[in-house]
Image (cartoon, rainbow over all chains, first blue to last red; front, side, top):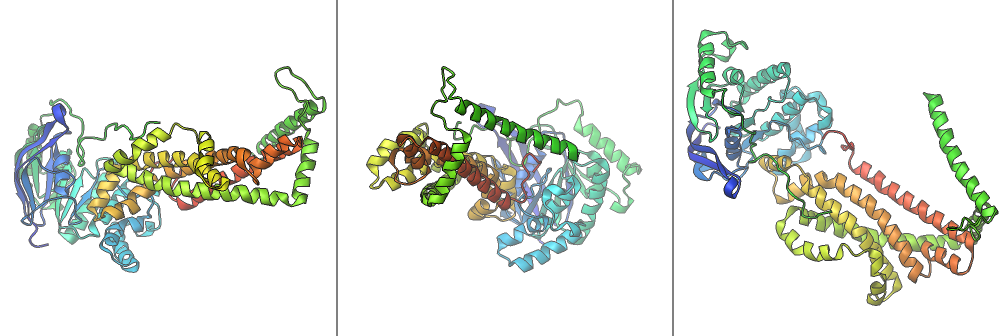
Length: 276
Length: 261
């Protein structure tokens, strides 16, 4: 894990086809140190999820290259674990088997993978829910299971697409603390996409701010203070100043854009191959 | 609560009894309603006697087994072919382009319309009846499988790939289970159509079987037996659909129809 180093060289990503095609993100240049917790902040539809999808390998850049430890990123890999905004647990697998899924794909035996999955569930506080079906869990618990499922693969990078965006405020605050607790243990690199300034400033070592579409990097802000000194109200003068800076960068008067997803354009109506 | 339930069951029972009574009345009076006549319709009592006679004679087992074997053969083959082709078509554009055109041409032809050609094509009437049953069940199963596979959440597929799932693991762990509710619906509909097709085929070219029994009763003017045959066909269809639904529920303990995923 010591060589983890994530780099983006002049990356642009085009979405859509023909006349509808547009640049979701344009000319992104950045690099992330191993073990860093980086938040990507930007308005809705700015392409931050698109960038995350490319880091995960679900989308290919139209220009430029993304590197992880010197290797170009091509296709999805368990090395780059992705947590979606809405959980993607398999409804037909119990929580334990969902968490053990990555290990099963590696070919580990049942006993071994279940033991490791149990440990992960313990980390995220879901040990008692191993035998439940995903639909029996609350939204927050589903995201905990989703995080455990990604971490069981010991990824070099943890990619998170507004993972707590759909949760209520109280659950979100609890999940943020849980995530920081886990990160303190695994120290993997985290790329955390959010449109919530407070969330970015509470969690990140560093905040990359993106402009509205086409998404470009417009600021790279190190966050001062230890996490233990950051309070949810962001009352510390240094954080309050940083928040004002972010607010000014995000231009709330921009017209709202439809949300993009890490898999490209939002799912549209695709006609079936067979008409009834 | 209990009294409401008793009342509702009583009402349902009463409704059935009323229908039986009406049948008895119309058949007894040989009622002629102009458009439809009950002159040759046997009353419920005679049908019951015919049913008991059939069970007493032992021939019923042979009729039943003959029909069940044909349905089992045709239906299971249709399930195998329908699900396999459906998954291939739903997952791969190449499979869709090569397999769909001929299937689309055949699809609008009702299975029953195949009967004359099937008799010419197959060496035995047995095989032709199995073929008709197969054709009847194939398309509901195939179509529902294709739709089920297409409806699998692409996020689940992407996420499984990200966790290291290869091509086959993706099919086994994500695509097939995801399509399963739709496949089971197709299997249930296919069960109904395969019975329908079998009975029709048996009426035309059978030696044994419930459809043959029913049609023979008409030609030999054993009118009570016609209704016995109809009732048996209904019971068999009901029982086999129930079996498919039970197997579906057993295979998908995670699934709650209408519930959120």
